[in-house]
Image 1 (cartoon, each protein chain N blue to C red):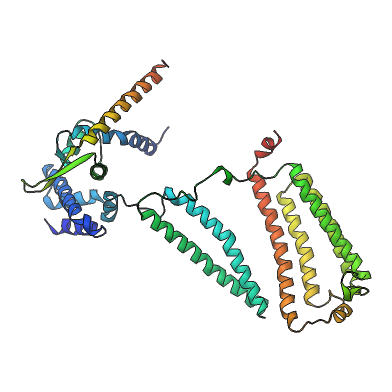
Image 2 (image 1 turned 60 degrees about the vertical axis):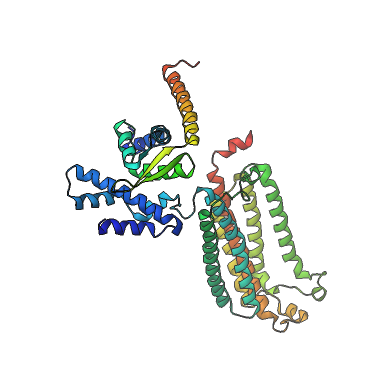
Length: 325
Length: 113
């Protein structure tokens, strides 16, 4: 045997378990030898024939894998869907909870909002990478282990997704909920001016700065009316990209002034702060950022939710006819 | 027009099972890999060496072929022979092959009985 064949056989056999190696090497030498002889018979020089035979065989690692039925993909069809479902589940449950927890912990420990968000993003990235890596590693090992598995997370009809709610009866509940919530919100804004009887200290003191009645409180009340009209528009037309844009504008119009007034101390009535005994020790450092994060988070989620519903609705373009049957 | 790659893919699909059957029938007479490859190709059963060698190994692992090393010549060669289990499978596959052939014949002549 010449060196080229020896090198090929060694390169192919070294990836195999020790027990299979001798037999495999012998078989491979037979195959290379026979293929080379056949080429020599067609009139080629032995060295050329050997080289051609090896080229025909291809990558030794791939050849060895095909001899011993070893998969050449990381995760094959047997586990791919289970792997993909589990990964989506982990990313949609574990990731937001962990990032939220880190964010909250950072804010509670008195870090600045910027630091806290930066840290939360860093931790989020590292959790995302770890979740992806370890899950994939386990499945890659499963793929390479003998025997059957994957029955535990097998598909059942219960896993079918619900059809997107495009019919009006499905949206009616949403409309009523929105109108009731917005109505109560407006009522509280007006009512707080005359005191909030269910909050002991604020029986007669307005919670919001009375100076805001000159512009900002009417502004928010008008915004609430617009939100109500928006809820009706959703009910009548369903989600579309125009309404997504309107939703974004409304949210920005609400959150930006509200956060600005709140953080610059113009929102809450100083007298109300006095009677409540604000600031409550160090609590202010924690409560203010939490309120800001929650308000911004709710608004961002509201916009994203609208986008998701619009995409689902347009993706199921053919569904309305089906829904009416 | 169907492109060549699609055609080649479907032809490969169609031939895949027939190569197993051809090996099981042909190896009633013991033979080694390269000789089998030559004889199948000369019969018009076109099979690639990269398909045949792993297939022989797999059939042996499934107990459908048995093998023996022949070391009488300069190059040791592994001779494969169809086992009784392989013989039984060959019979089942042949029956099925005939049934499919009949069905396709009826389908193309339009006689649906």
